[in-house]
Length: 168
Image (cartoon, rainbow, N blue to C red; front, top):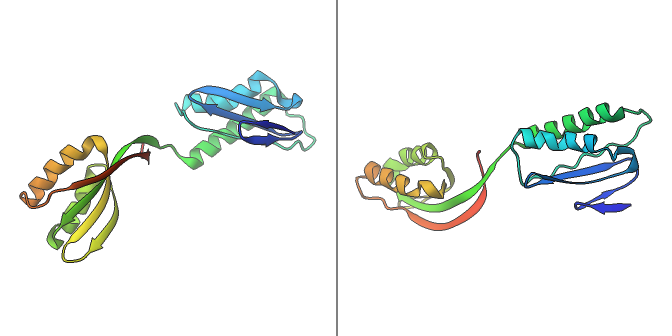
């Protein structure tokens, strides 16, 4: 057994990882071909995905696939995994407290979504308090639209900013 990129490899398996566009791999003697390893990485390069890790494991079942067959098998599996996982973009998000009266609730919720944000929570008390996530670069534009929608009666509060994944 050997340790590689946070995974354990045993005879008949291979692990491959990509991060910042560079490949780090560890393979058994059976699949040590650079061409085979490159097949997995090409999937991420083609999709322009960085900061990702992909581990593909194949248990030898007695059928020799050859370099081309292994490349297609590993590359195809990496593509299926990427498609299933989806792609997100790390960016700076602002967590906002948006107080609003009940008559503006639905329009305020739609405005958050229209500006590329997500309503995380809505507390219904005397007024509605929306907790929303918005890309940090869009907060000023959002505040202007809130001011226009509420005729200057609603002011948002930026509670925190944090990096997290979101839509591409």
